[in-house]
Length: 340
Ligand code: NAD
Ligand code: 89Y
Image (cartoon, rainbow, N blue to C red):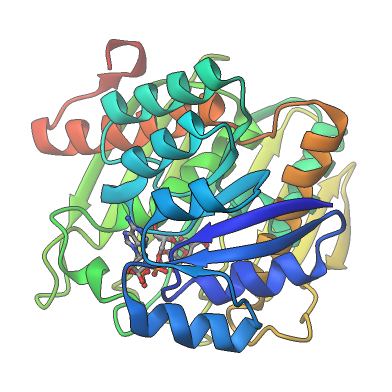
C-alpha cells in the first residue's frame, strides 16, 4: 500500500481526499496546510490525525511514498523541489507552474531524484472525454484533421475559488489549460498558436474569453474556444464539447454528455454521462470522477514502472501552449512553440 501526504487543504482538496479513499493501492497518511483552520476542518472531515503546518516537517517525520500537492501555482516549484529532494514521488495540481523556467526546473528536480512526477491534469481523464479519446485512438473516424474543443459557461467559479478573479491571467491559465491538454491528447503536439482574448466580466482582473487557433506538427488544425462570460441554458459547466473530423468519419461530444460518431452515412449515439460517485455532486461530478481516475492511473504507473500520461515532462508541452497563447494575444501574432 502506497502512503501519501497531502499538501493543501483548500477548496479542491476534499475531492482528492474522497478520491484517495477509493483508489486501489494507496492511502493518505498525513495532511499539511499553513492555514490551521483549514487543516483541522479537513483533517476532522477525513479522519486524518497526522497534521502539519510545515511541509518540510511532514516530509521529515512521516514515512511517505508520495506527496499530492493541491496548492495554487505560486507554491508549486518550492514544494515539488522539496518533495523531490526528500525522495518522494509527486503529484502536482495544475497549472503546473507560473512559467516555463520553473516548470523545467521542477521536471529536472524529479529526474535528478529518480522519482515519478505527474501533473494532476485531469480533464483528459473525464470519462466522456476519455471515451472520445479512446474511440479516436482506436481509429473509429480514421486520421483526425480538425478538432474544435469548446468550453463556454456562465458558472460562478469565483465564489469557490476567489483567487481566479484576482490574477492578471484567468481563463487560459486556469481552464483553457485543460482544453489545450485534451486537444493535445486528440490531435498531437502543436507547432504554432494564434490567440485572441477578451475580458467581459468587469469584476475580474484577467481574461475570461479566449479563442485559440492551433496548427499541429501533423499539419492539421484545431480551435480551442473558452468563455466564462457565456449565458446558456442549460448551463454546461464543466463540460468540454468536442467536434473532431477524421478522414473516415466525425465524432461529436455534445452537451449533456452525448457522444455521436458519424461514419458511412450512419450515426451512432451514446450516453456517456459520468458516474455520480457517492461523495460527488452535480455539476462537479464530471470533474470529481476524473480525480479518482487520474489518482488510480498514478498508482498503476508506479506499480508497473511506467510514466503517467500527464508526467511533468509531458505537461511542459501543455504549459508551452498556455504561454504561447498569452504571448500571441498580447503581441497579436502567431507564436511558434519551439521558440519558447
Ligand atoms: P485554495 O487556495 O482553496 O487551497 C490551497 C490551500 O493550500 C490553502 O488552504 C493554502 O493555505 C494551502 N497552501 C498554500 N501554500 C502552502 C504551503 N506552502 N504549504 C502548505 N499549505 C499551503 O486552492 P484550491 O481552489 O483548492 O486549488 C488548488 C489547486 O487546484 C489550484 O492550482 C487550482 O488550479 C487547482 N484546481 C484544479 C481543479 C481540477 O479540476 N484539476 C479544480 C479546481 C482547482
Ligand atoms: O480551477 C478550474 C479547474 O481546474 O476546473 C474548473 C475550475 O475549478 C474552474 O475553472
